[in-house]
Image (cartoon, rainbow, N blue to C red; front, side):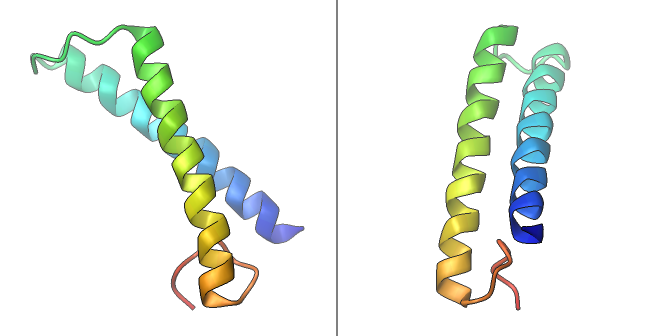
Length: 70
């Protein structure tokens, strides 16, 4: 059960970090021209990829942690 909470935390933090990075980059003068909805969509994709990586790491490493490091 702890592994699932760890995976959920990684997913949520990946979403927040990606969303914030896109919004900060857009307001910092970098020519992105991304809307809030587009930033949320990209952040959602990053979060899904974090979940998939976590499940793959559990299978590859062989423990219950979503980390690739033992």
